[in-house]
Length: 266
Length: 335
Image (cartoon, rainbow over all chains, first blue to last red; front, side):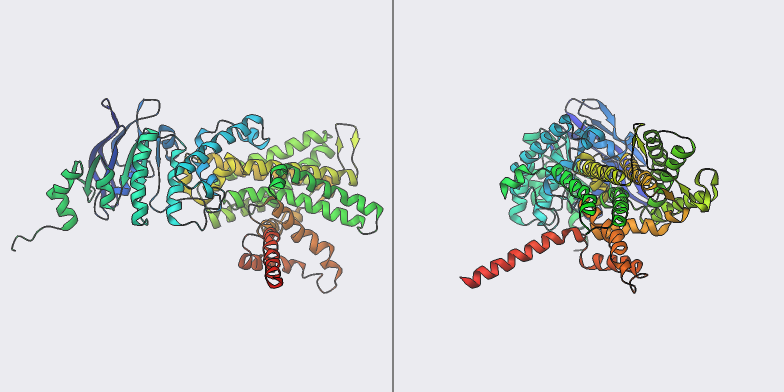
């Protein structure tokens, strides 16, 4: 079902809410180690596509073939939400979803939830293997925080941290599970220009260091054009165009979707 | 300050806390500061603290409300009394069975929690608790109905007969173990999963936390602690009436963890003292406050939620902060 270096193949994806077709017969393919951008005007159905991939929504039709960490091809539609991360897909959220009452490092450690092998009883008794396991992942989390430059804040509560930091914590959490595909829902929203530039660097760094693909939805066109290898444009849930940044900018359908149709009378 | 942090491990704190609690009876024996009846009150408070710890796991960490704590505690109390007195089973066996059976029921309630949340979960658990209470009244074969069921101080390992004083020590040991294990669990992977479930359901499931599993674990842990408290209660007070296990008791557990501090282990014990021991030991001595002690809990909850949402356990840190500020101020003035 998947060719050599294809990672995720979206085939005839459709979902409707009541009468509204949020996503309609959408097809695209994400390759390994690719930074893939999904763009479209407000309400185009970008986040819905995300939610379908991560199984927060169950699509009405279509298949989502994915080559998981064991290199087996699976159909994501058969999974439940909490099983998706085990296949190697992890996501961030449009409105940062962190646990306010926990410290930054504990929030990052939630990302390693599925990797823990010790059970409740060994954890309750602090058996050596549980202590060791906790230490291993704590060290890993600290390493990631160092890379993102927020290590000094690791013991601070998430509550009250600036938005830019929260975005980084959420990003750090996704790295904990060593994913094959990271899905970023509007990573630049709420960031200032400097932070956005930094983000572009970080996204490339993610791809190179963690050897994974990145799928992102973003409104900041500069960021998308800057970092994405391939961009797919959609509007009203329908496929518009796919290609690299130049192709997309030149594509008349994309221009029309963003800027409106030129009036023929003038 | 740093050296202190490095050498002082949390478990030492719990052991020290247990030793301090264990000193209270000797204090009663050798000085006249503490009356013997006080020991019963404090022992009872510690028992309630064990059950409240369970509710804190459920509500504080996992964000699942339960108004059924009293029912489960009562169920364990009656079961243990029936098994030791009527069936003549050893205490250890009855302890295990009296924890196991309510826990199975608790897990079933956990299954309900998948479908309903918040207020409705509170109502459903309240209903379960009321059904249990009605059962205690009607099921005279085991519970002896309204006349109440009596039990004895337990005999450990078949030869070690406990009395009131040694039973008190057993309660302290159980509380310390419960605090220690709760602390370990809540500061590891499972605790983080509970926190994630409460803080953001979508983040939790995206990170692979299977909410069915963790909700059931949360309910199981809460029921285990409530049942342990029930067994301790019936063998310490040596009597159980159906009217003990009513809504008011469940609400008192809620009051304990809210006043003491959600997600705080010491806070839970502090809350138990504020809700149970203080009215019993001090307020009842004052004629006018005799009946008002129940009103006090309600007032306290409102005041704490409004002005101190993290619970009274944090008052220490805040006082320290203020003290440091004052000292700094004084230093500045003297300079």
